Every structure is written in structure tokens, then in C-alpha cells.
Length: 428
Image 1 (spheres, rainbow, N blue to C red):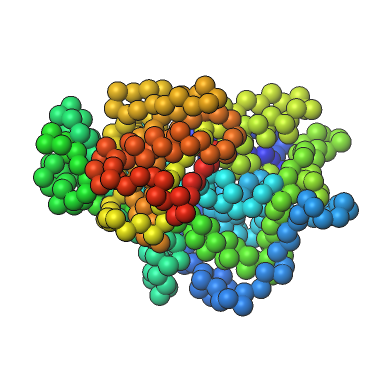
Image 2: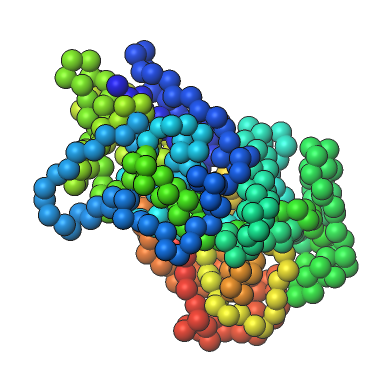
């Protein structure tokens, strides 16, 4: 019989794993070696050749025939974002378990594919409930990049990995004082952190304007990656295990219900639109902001009362492709971003804007250059369910907000970038 675990990706909670009562469920144990071990499969480097076999990987499409197939694995993971990928990889290299991944769409179709890829600590607080977890994740990703480099591969090419450093900027004397205290706390927590005055900041980023009273917290070791590249890189290595019958993917195949034992009512697996997937050890829900509603649907006919307090929060990013008006050498965010991590209400340090649905999203300046030379501007946060509709009023507000920090953008009408602009939207 299988246990069921819900892995909550976002927003951050005090505990990011919610386990159901399981008096008779077996416990799955494995080595935590995902980032610490050598990134090989059967002695081969993690970066596999272009002739890599993908035939053993099972992929399903809801548009294909209506016949249902039955498969059995040790672990079934629901969700195809960065969380499922790392969970699956951990099982594959740290145990002998077989793993199936199932999703209603494809990898990177949700929050993972729509994010900026920041691996930053500059906006974190050492005394927060999530500090230890965040620090561990931060260090593991850095170890991962070093392992890739140690194998003679380029993390920039494989993962879109860049050690850009990050700048948390303020424009008032009050914000500057807050940033100085923040630098002190981050330094005491073991991070390399430095406060930059307005003049010192101008040397780092000449196009950025924060005024004579402004300044920034600077963390030189912060990084960013390209989520699409990172997912493709690790997924390719995961697929090597399909040759042994230990790994399979079922995409475009939404989960429709849990399979339960007639005698004990314990979870035995999941039923999808096209397949029946039995699980001998565990069913893991790693569906990001869909985890709450999915869990509610899966258990609606059971006697288990389950409330997963996750609400989808929509965000917009503006990507200006092949941007050449100026360069950024670091990742930047304004102080207001920190406030808006925790709510979507209007704060003095950032702006809000009314939209058609009557919601009030928060907009804070974030800016970086990705590995393709595109300028990525953000960002907004808005509780509007699972909508992925582009709201032009928010796009315009992001542009206007960015212009308050980068005067050169005020000289460039957003309309001039119609052909070289794209918007990333996701719910987290």
C-alpha cells in the first residue's frame, strides 16, 4: 500500500511537506545525495549525447485512443515542475525505487517555466521560519553547478547558470538605514554581504538611479539560472533510468482520482485520463499552486478531511528580447519586493494598480539580463485564481515602475518593443 505526501512549492509555509495520517503506510527512505553525489548514470556524465534513447519513456496524450493502460511503480509523483524533477532524481540516484511522473501538461508549463530563475538570499531574513530550508537549497544548487563544472561541462550552457550577484536597492534615507541593518544580519548569518552607497552602486550599475540618499545591499555570490535549461538537463539524465524500467513520464494526462484498497481503503495509486498507475510505496503531490485544489478533489469521496492552505498567485514578467540600450551586470530588486513577498496589498515603498477584475496587484521593480541577452523586468503579484491572461495595464505599470529606477527606459516607449517583447505569466 502507498503513503501520500503533499509537497507544497509556493507560497512558503512553516512546513513545506504535509503528510496524511498513515498508520499502516510504509515509510520510504533513501540517501540524500541529489546534489552531493557525482552526476553520472552507469558511469556516464549527466550531460548525455544527442543520440540518447528516449523510447523507453512512456508519454501519454489525452487526445489519443480511449483504451486505458495499467502500470506499477514504487513511487508516483503528480506534477511536472522543478519540484517533481528533483524529487524523482533523488529517488532514482539514491535508491532502487522506480518512479512515474504524471501531469496534465508538460514540464515548465507552470510557475517553473514562468519564473526569473533567481537563486538569491539578499531578500531573505535569517530569523524567518524558512531560512534554514532556503539556505540548504541555496547551497545545494551551488554544489550542483560545481559538480556540472567538475565534469568538464559549462553550467552556463547546461543550466543557464550565472553568478551575477544581487542588489536589493532603496531610494530613501529610511530604506538605506534598513538595508544597512539587513547587511549586518546577513553577514552574521554567514553570507558575504556589503552595503553600497549611492556612489558605489553607480559604479556597479551605471544605468540605475536611486538618488543621493539611496543605496543597496549587495550579495556577490547570488546566482540565477534558466529554468528551462535546468529542467531539460536533469530530465535527460532521469530518462536514462527508463532503460532499466525505473522511470516513466505521463504528460498531457491529468489525474482524475485516487485508487484505494477495497479492504483497507489505503491508497494504492492514481487513475489518470489515460492510465492506471499503481504505487507500491508512495504517491507524492508536487503540483505547486494546484496542490490544494487537487488534494481536495482527490479526497472528496473519502473520509479524510484535508485542507492545504495554498492559493494561486498570478505574476507578470516582461521580457525584452535582444535588448541593447544598456546592460545589467547584476540582478536587482527594490525594497518593496520584500514587502510584497508576503501580501498583495499596497505598501508605501511600491505601487499598486487597479485592473479589470477589480483585483489590486502589487508591482515591484525587479530586473536582470538572462543568458540570451534579454532584459527581464518584473514583477507583479495578484490573487486571481489560475488565470494566465495577459493584463496590459499591469505590463504598462511594470514598465513605468522600471523607468523610475532606469531613466533611460523613460526615453523608450514600450510600444517600440511590440515585436521583441514577450510576457511570462505563472501562478505560484
